[in-house]
Image (cartoon, rainbow, N blue to C red; front, side):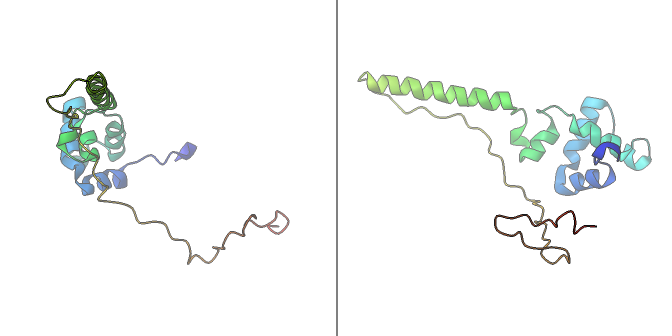
Length: 152
């Protein structure tokens, strides 16, 4: 594409659906834009447009929750994570103040239960260029590129 933007479209949308995020994407397209993902196969919605719309969904969307690890992440934005961390800090600071002043706590403060991001199940394999015919090891402390004179 012009400008070096890889765009998106059929392959990117297909990969997102293949990774198990199709239902969340369909729900969000319906909720936020009034579109149906099936319209891509009907020809009424281009894959590129669906992909671009999905990139601009809000952080609390079903797709964002699905990409983060599941429905338990629904509604957990950066702000809610920060508020949970702030609440934990205040609770533990209060408990420490009570201990320092000689008081006793009935129980230790319980941290807010924040959903944890799951490991990526669909990790891309590393790009291995060691068998490429033009691959050369980088010289220690040097530049592996040929001199401009050698390129002529």
